[in-house]
Length: 93
Image 1 (spheres, rainbow, N blue to C red):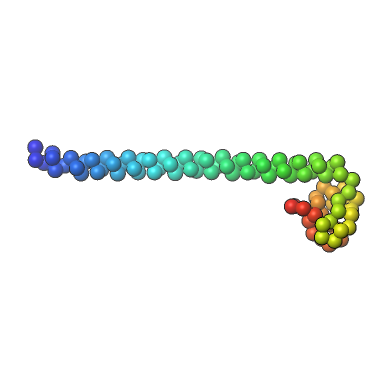
Image 2: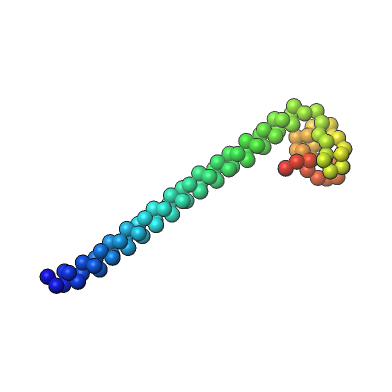
């Protein structure tokens, strides 16, 4: 009986340690899953912004560079948002 009493605290500590380890593993897995979802959402957002920019550029007939002030009517410059004169982007590439 005395041995069981002495083992009970050790067994309780072992159970608590196992539970904490299991919980930490579960939280790490959930964190990885959430990070994967966030990364996928970010990629979708980047794709959406790129497509929106391309579609908006199709509606424009010119682009003006904020750096040098020149205007380009070249469809490639409009679509890319690029200034061929100062070789800079007119917005976020």
